[in-house]
Amino acid sequence: MSDSAGGGESGGVAAAGQDAEADGEPPQQAPPSLCPSEQGAAETTEDGPPPSPKRSRRSEEEQGDGVTAQEHTAASPQGKTVLDLDFSQNPSMLTGSWTEYSSFPENYLKGCKWAPDGSCILTNSADNVLRVYNLPPEIYSYSWDSIPEMSPVLRMAEGDTVYDYCWFPKMNSLEPDTCFLASSSRDNPVHVWDAFYGKVRASFRPYNHLDELTAAHSLRFSPDGERLYCGFDKMVRVFCTERPGRDCEERPTVVKKQGQSGIISCFAFSPCQSVYACGSYSRCAGLYSCQDGALLALLPTRHHGGLTHLLFSPDGNYLYTGGRKVSTHTHTHTETRGEITLLLFSLSGRYLLSGDTEGVVSVWDAHTAPPDGNEELLQPQLRFQAHWDCTNGISVHPFMPILATSSGQRQFPWPTDSEGDSASDTEGGGGGVALQQEIRQDNALTLWWAGPLSPPAEESRDQNTAAAEEEAPGVPSV
Image 1 (tube, rainbow, N blue to C red):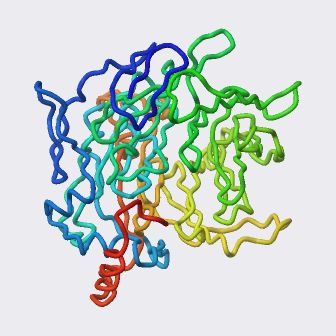
Image 2 (cartoon, helix red, strand yellow):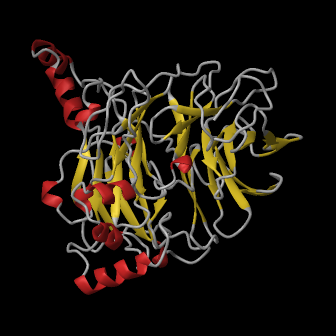
Image 3 (cartoon, rainbow, N blue to C red):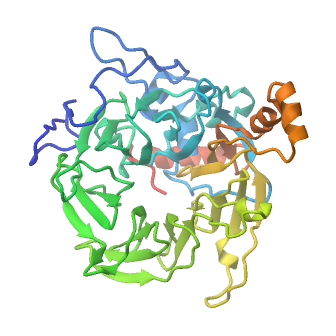
């Protein structure tokens, strides 16, 4: 794809080309050496671009890699009912990645997101690097005892702190032109990354009223993938996915001092109406028309801190919100801990999942929620300790009962209660505080199995294979 520095560019993100030079963009060079893995990561050569380190499921089936086509078919939703998460017991840990985040001091993660086709997962961390991991092939064959630690097949380095990132919703590994993602970082334009080679495909450059480049605080593709919504202070800018550059539609959220103020921090699209929701750091949420961005409703403020997550129920009748926790009693230990970090629905929409700053994942049964108007606190059906540090990301595989979690947070020394404690820490080389931090630090990506513990019956596998052969390969549908 081509993308010049001026306005009015043509050519979509699915086109060929790598020209994306702009203010604050990373140099267009080959990505650094990739960690080899069983999925076939390759190193850069001087003669040209490296072979694709992120291979499609079709190539895995054709070349072996220990996974047969039948096993992939049995694990795909084509011709079978999608397996939802089962929380009758605690999920079982499959594998993860932790060594990758140990070379950089306090390289805590900031979230994880499965690709729409389920072939890989994307992470963000404090070193400003986006990493792509392929789904371990051993999971398809239920060979869970032999799953090694995961290594990334792609690393995409942003120039500064990453604010937000998202997959193209129509992403399909069998169609490389659809395999891309968008990210926004401080003092940089929105970058569109190729998910096969890890290079910048194109850029969207938002400018403010002073004609200065400004960074988007939140990103979300529309469900059809034709628009990219970007959140700013009292402003939403909408870019056409097929036209990278600076041209965009501006949709202010405050008009004549009326509307939704604050930085737009998150988006959510209704599954059944042409409506999207915006959350802001002003602690409120608004509903808007997808056609022209008109404000339809401003929801009452129920949070003590800024909103960080929005989520529509699968039927579109409810909007769930998650926000920062602001303590008014800083001397009370329990008042400042256990903050909810995210919200996520399971595949069927029955279970609502959330992580917190204590590393605990909580699961609520949305079908048992109290009726409207009842303020009774709904207790979680299940709580399990996923990490020893903050669980800052949860993502559910699009068609398998696999839960991904990410963890970590910036660590600060805890103040000592007495001079004696300080002296003992000093004599021991500061071991008291350092040891306490080391125990709490847990920077990792972890995969969990929350489904049946045995493979499907052979008859069911044969039926699934026959049904899948009648359909053309495509994106697994939930």
